[in-house]
Structure formats: structure tokens, C-alpha cells
Image (cartoon, rainbow, N blue to C red; front, side, top):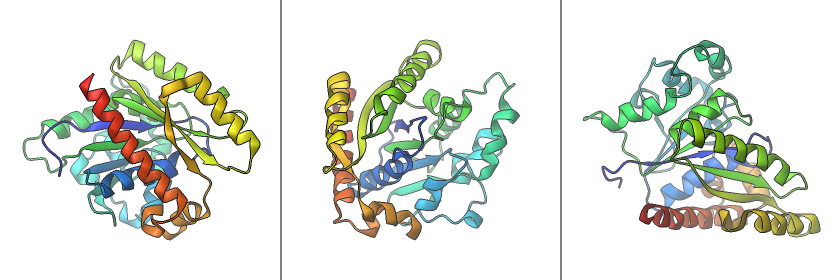
Length: 270
């Protein structure tokens, strides 16, 4: 169970689509809950794939992260329990597509999500007590992603094992550095997780080697394999760990969750 300590807020970001970002958000959140952590997954991608992948139908999303960011709802109003014990979700709707225009002229436009978390943390009667809050961002470096980086303590970057992996990474790291320098000096790179690994592909092995050479200890030891069962799971509205806990993808996400917690212990001790 969660203590009264502040939750660790980790944003899962990569401006490149198709790298396993939402799959990582869903399954890391599930794996952390499975090993006893109280977890909230915040879906701020207008596509809402994290919400769908956790079985939250569109008609169930009476309030969404759009309402959070416009100030029309609290975290308690928006959060929905999932089929995974200890895991709640703040779901997304397509309304988020218009949010940037609505808030772009507001002086606190980059701080909207941070204020939501701060209000919840300071509400004496709040039931929103979590060990981890994971934020699933859209695949772009827009105002929604900026809000998530301002609200978070760390960024977790999913990186596909493909030829152009490092190219896109440098742009994301530049954005993180800009946020550190201007708005959120406490923001760190939690780690880079290599996804969609196919051991039969020689190029994939070369990419892993190159990324580890460049990024060193920032790269998690766990590598997420390409796995049919993980790909199938969202169409059933389930995380892979509920769909098939024994598949290689599910086991990899359990390993990643353990590694994230180990890193947390080191970061907190520092």
C-alpha cells in the first residue's frame, strides 16, 4: 500500500511514433501494480490508446485528462479503476486535440498538469495516494508533452531497436535539457528502454550495442522483445500481463519494473 510519501512521477515520452511507448506505459504500470505498488497511469495522448488498452471503453470516460487540464475536474473525478488491482487510470479523449489552442495563451499553460498533482497531494481528504504516477504522452514534442515533463521528476524513453533510433533520441534529450534549464531543474532521464527487439535481426543487435556505447548506464539492462502476445493484448482491452503472463514480453516488463524500482532506490538515496 502507498504511504503518505509523494509519488514518483515518471513521464514516458518519445516524439517518434511506433516505438512501443503506450505498450510500455500500460505494461510497466501493470507490472509495478503486480509487485505491490499503488499506480496511476495518466493518459494525455488524444488517441487514448493507453485507456483502450486497459479496457476503458470510450463511453466510460465521463471525465478525462482534458477536464483535468482545463481545470474542470479533479484527479478524483477523473480516475477510473482498471481490471488490474492497485492500478487506476486517468483516461484520455479526443477533446485533448483542441486543448493546445485553448490554453496556449494562459500564463500557466506548461504547469497545468503539475498543478493538478500538487492540488491532489495537498488535499487532506484525498484518496489519490500513489507510489508511482506514469504519464503516457503523445508522439510529439507539444504542449501536452511539455506539461508532462514539467509535472514529472523523471523521463523514461522507449527506443525501438532500429537504424534511426539514436537520431530521434538526440531531439528528445535536447527537449529534456531545455525543460531542465528553464522550468523543471529536477527533471532527470530515468532510463532508456530498448523495445521491439528481434534477436534474429543482426541490425537490432548493432543498434543495442550503439545505444549502450553512447548512453552507457542510462540504458536499462532489460530489453523488450517483439512479441505477438503483447501485440494482441490491447485488442482484448488487457495489458499483456493479464492476457498472457508467461509470454516473453510480459516477463520482460516484470523485469523492467524490478529494474525501475532498483533505480528508484538509488535515486532516492543520492
